[in-house]
Image (tube, rainbow, N blue to C red):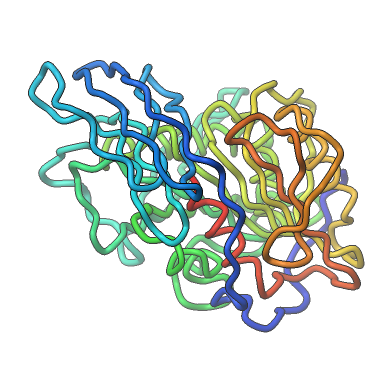
Length: 360
């Protein structure tokens, strides 16, 4: 797909920045937590209960599976530390932590983050070119360095900025998702001035794999400095940010647990997608003349194949979303095609993505 010259939203739908109508996504059945072994402890997995739990197997380091709703905490491990597979009860049926830990867990003096403290790291692309890349990190109000925490990466649209995403301006509060998804670390990277057709506009062309390399470097930085659950890393974005999320769903589905895409497209940039399941929630207007809906249809079909989904669909909240049947357990694909809508953020997008992400 050819990336448009400028992928800036043309119309802001009512409620786009603050989530608009609130819906509750369909929940996955809870699965019993199995005992797991991490590099430092052995603990029993959380027990599953409740029909709205979203139990999901831990994917990193052999961690125990996560429990569903109201799961109990794991028994004490051999190192004296408690197992961590309990699923938390809640209105969204949120899954418990996977049990895996990162180097930042227990760090006494993490770096200062937030809107006033942008971070900079050097990133080298596949051709050996190194560039300084900037990003922002926002911690939840109740961040606890002893608890592995979900992470959401948010990507700005063409001509946008990471600083706008972390602010309260258009696209702020990370597209309105942050207030609806507590207990989550949010990260926003800054695109380079290298948009095809307009070198003065920031975006995510992933030239020589530079933006994917940037993503990997940010993940490593966040995991080194904060307590991250590596089995619950997610991505969202609108327009060029949606394209970036589709790219990560294609190239890094073994790292990202889910993507929430608004008006994006899948362009593999010459790289074949990795065959690995990834949960996906996608919305696109069928009257979009900036990024044609066919680009997200390509992404949807890729994720359907990765997750071994069928062709039948069921209507889910919010309307007009549908969920595909037959997908691998824990890897749903939700498609929200909006009739007559152009290149906008639908009013239901923030709540839809937040509820979808809360499963994990």
